[in-house]
Amino acid sequence: MEEILKNMEKGKRDKIINSALEEFSKNVFQKASTNKIVQKAGISKGLLFHYFNSKRELYDKLEEYVVLLITDAIREQVDWTGSDLVERIKQITLIKFKLMNQYPYIYDFSLAMLKNGSVEALKGRYEKDFTGLMTKVYQENIDYGLFKEGIDLQKVLRIIQWTLDKYGEEFIEKFKQTGKCIEPDQIYTDVEDYLNILKIAFYKEQK
Image 1 (cartoon, rainbow, N blue to C red):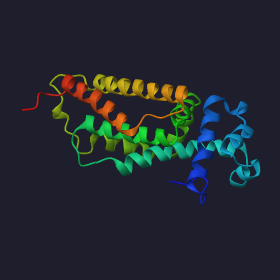
Image 2: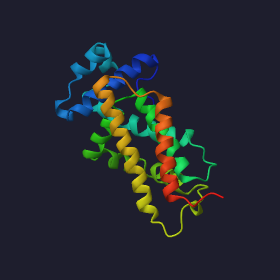
Image 3: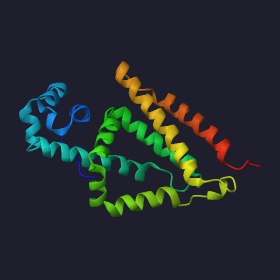
Image 4: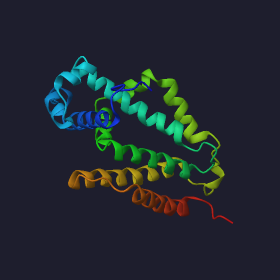
């Protein structure tokens, strides 16, 4: 993954990234203000444009950074030896929430990317990586025999995704109201509880 703000101290780098994610998620590109970004990040405009030639380059690099940050984290942190699909989805969910704790506006920014078609464009540039990762997630070592006979797997996956998306929305809303992220232990417990309930509904009874 190409590094953004290379050689900068991590705390300062994350502050700039978070400021940019927030500004671009709250405003369309044309109305987003680099003045607000540097003000919230506590840096000079000169420093920002030392790393990026323009607002457009900042935005484009930020999009690429977000997509590759998420996909690289999944690729590197998932236990690919496991055969339980729900457990794998849980791992991926927890990876995403960990990133959301580091970058609270990454979710809103990702939604903005979906709306303007940026994700599809980036998928085109990294089609092989995206396709390979999705195939890996849903096929590598997965035992679909764990699911109940005759169950509609596509609908099951949608229900799981809807559940986790709703929890993610509540996570973001709490952050917006309080300025504080949920503690990682609480996230783990909540996700575990929801997915265990879904396992009871969709998996064969374990003997």
